[in-house]
Amino acid sequence: METSVRKLFDRYESVFNRSLGGDIDMDEIASLYASDFIAASPAGIMTGKNDDQLKQVMAQGYAHYRDIGTKEMWIRDVRVYPIDELHCVAHVAWTATYAREDQPDIAIDFDVHYLIQELDGEPKVFGWVSGDEQALLRKHGII
Image (cartoon, rainbow, N blue to C red; front, side, top):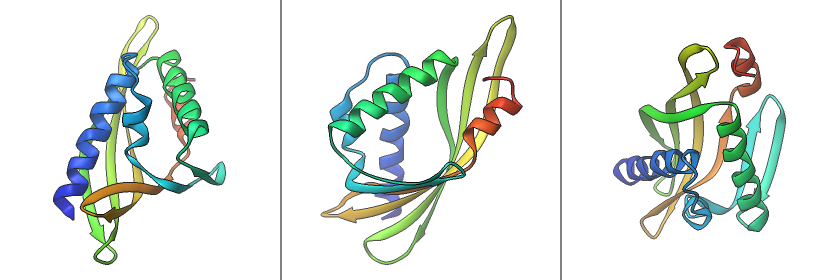
């Protein structure tokens, strides 16, 4: 499972960076996620379906990231912890680079913890837990 999960996040990173550059393939993005998902952050808990609404929200999210100067997102590390033969938690350490007006670019490290289910040899994200992204961006003067 570890190898397939690492490949999933290689794709995730690639899709994210292409989307930041304006090359958005919503079907490819949606293929990373299970049919239903749960997300938790200090903003609350949300559930959703992998449908047209998710695609719309994701497109808006990438536009927002571009608007605040996000240049790229890179994975520093992936640690995979099996739960059983079909599920695991992937702790993903990201670095985001932001362009700032009249200042050097800034790199910000953060972690997201993803819940993964692997059926028929294909892992999909069915949940994630993240920290307070807005507070982190404010702390670094991005927003």
